[in-house]
Image (cartoon, rainbow, N blue to C red; front, side, top):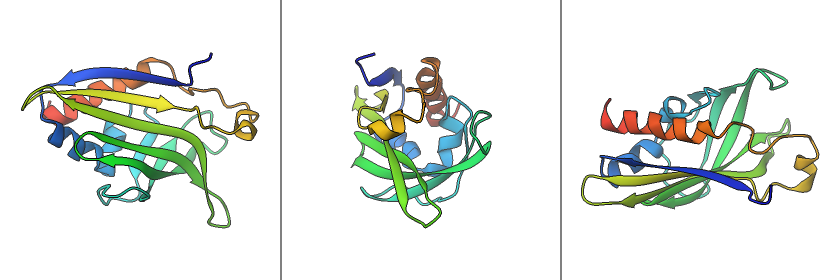
Length: 159
């Protein structure tokens, strides 16, 4: 596969500012997640600046520990148009290591009460030593992104 990103797009009948506010709230991410892996936000503060760190409790049956925690670092923050973060882990010595994959939401207002939302998972910056660990990219099926966007739409529309 030459393309090292996947994306999905959905139009929601909600202003971009409201969609962005939900995405910038880490406590909503488990409800948005289309895989069921995201369990709960450890850091509950809204995402307000590039470089901000927030952690998530996760669960995946194929992960060596089952339950684990990821560390996310905000890479893109352009309210109300874009938000994105790198995902990684905290090593035993407290050092943060990011794998090179990024989750990004791009919001395009289509009027005062409608927004086109594109979710992209990009693994083009994953270094070779991580690829050699045998991790498949993307580590989920194509329906994950669509499921996530539908969950987001339900959340922002109050449905």
